[in-house]
Length: 157
Image (cartoon, rainbow, N blue to C red; front, side, top):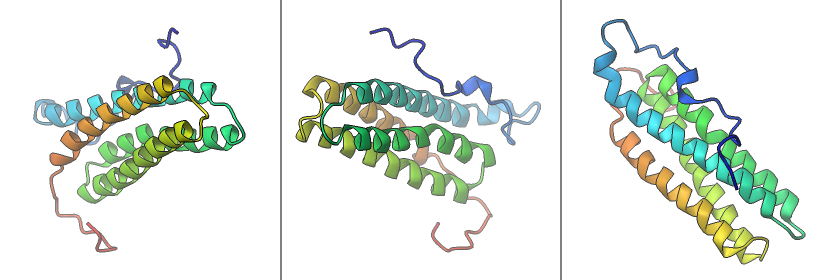
């Protein structure tokens, strides 16, 4: 199956509004932007494979499962952009927590689909492999968050 044109999420380069992308200072933030871009692009892959996976689901719970999977898959890219757009530690941490939750729930739903015999093992394995790649890039991304002077009014971060 050709998956090249199956992603309706914007590409990373469609976003050029980062606040910390000041003229002459871009080089300082290049590693941060590169980590975010890699994560975002993998999130797009997860989304693409989730769409294809949902098309293969069958059985009594297929419609509800499709809805849950797509809700979680659709949250990854916007939350990455939200974390990067503000360049604020608290915002990054909050979005990272939401991203982790959505990715974990997505993985659980995909694995449960196999347990309930709503999909094939190979279909499940493809999506889980993409989520695993996403998780590794996510860990690299969050390891480089830098605490700043902004306070979390809720005291969580």
